Amino acid sequence: MSADSEDVEITIEKLQQELRMFFCNDDTTINEWLDLPLPVLNGERPRNMFDTAERRQQLFQIVEEMKYGEMA
Image (cartoon, rainbow, N blue to C red; front, side, top):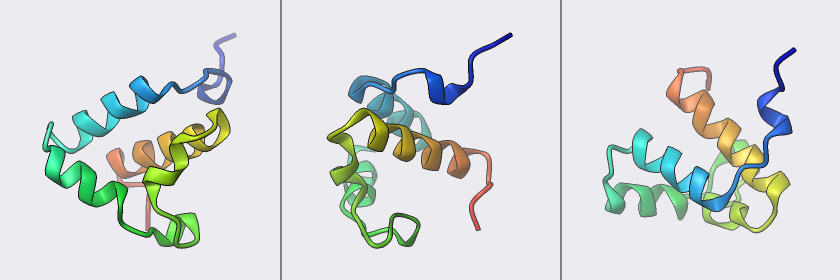
């Protein structure tokens, strides 16, 4: 049986890598997005989500949903 993605700790480096892939290595756009209050985060900025593994996992899931068009 394969492990769920939630069982894998998302490191800061992994999250940064996913952001670079999603935003095509555009650091300006990445930084703008990281500082943008998001409704899905109840108005919190993504940059503030790097502090704990649980919050990085939540942010990683949001990026994955954006990648695959699962966000409304």
